[in-house]
Amino acid sequence: MEASSLPLSEFPNLSVDPARLPRHVAIVMDGNGRWARVRGLNRCEGHRRGKDSVRAVVETARQLGIPYLTLFAFSNENWQRPKTEVRFLMQLFHRYLITESKRLMKRDIRVVAIGEMSRLPAAVRRVLSDTIRLTAGNRTMTVVLALSYGGRQDVVEAARRIAEAVAAGRIKPEQVDERMLQRELLTWNIPDPDLLIRTSGELRLSNFLLFQLAYTELYFTETLWPDFRERDLLRALCAYQGRTRRFGMVDDGASISLSAANQA
Ligand code: IPE
Ligand code: IPE
Ligand code: MG
Image (tube, rainbow, N blue to C red; front, top):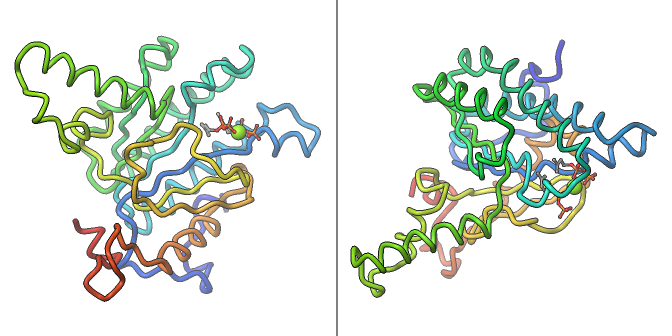
C-alpha cells in the first residue's frame, strides 16, 4: 500500500476533532538536504523523496476536510542555491504537476500558486498555469503552492500598488488600512493560516507569509520533510487543537474559541 493512502483509522491515538480543524494549514517543508546527507546521498534525493511527503500530506488534509493547504516549495532566496539543485527542483515541480493532475482532479482539489511566477522556467510556468486552469472549478480543497515566494517581496509589491493608487489620486493616504494591504497581497482571496508547521527543527519563518502569520499558531518539529507523513500531520493538528487562541484578548470564555476563529 502506498504511504499516501493509509486510512486515518490507522492512528487511533491521534484523533482529531473534525469540528475544530484549522481552516488553513501552511507548511515550510524543510530538511530535504539533511535527510539525504545523513544517508550519504545527494541533496536532490531528499527533494525527490519529499515529493512523497507532499502527496501524503495533501491526501490526509483532503481526507480530514481541511479547506486550504499552503506548501512552501521554493523561496525567493532559494534561487541563490547551486544551479544544478535549482534545475533539479524545477524539473521536480514540472514532473509533480504533470503526474499529480489526474489525482488532483479526482480528489476535487484546486491548485493555486503564489510567488514571482515570471522567474520560473517557461516549462514550469506552462504546466503550472495548465494545472491552475484545469483545477479551477474544484471545490473540496485548495492547495496553494508557494513557488519563488517571499513574504517581504509580497508586502513590498502590495505597498507599491497602493502607493501608485495614492499617486494617481484614486485613494487618499488616510484610506490605507490593514484590509487594503491584505487585499493587495498575493493571498488576497485566501484566509490567513491558522496553523504553520515547519519541519527539520529550524525555528524561523525564512520569509514565509510574514503579514499573514500575525496570529497563526506555530508548530515546529524535528522531523525532516521527507519523513513527514500522515502521523506527523495528525500530531501537529492535535497540538493545534490543544491551544487557546486569544488574538490579543483575555481568556475568560469571551475570547475566540478555535472553532469560532475558523468560521470567522
Ligand atoms: C527544503 O529542504 C526544500 C527547499 C528549500 C526547496 P532543504 O533543501 O532546505 O533541506 P536542508 O534544510 O538543507 O536540510
Ligand atoms: C525555507 O527553507 C524555504 C522552503 C522550505 C521552500 P530554507 O531551507 O530555504 O530556509 P533557511 O535557509 O534554512 O532559512
Ligand atoms: Mg532548508
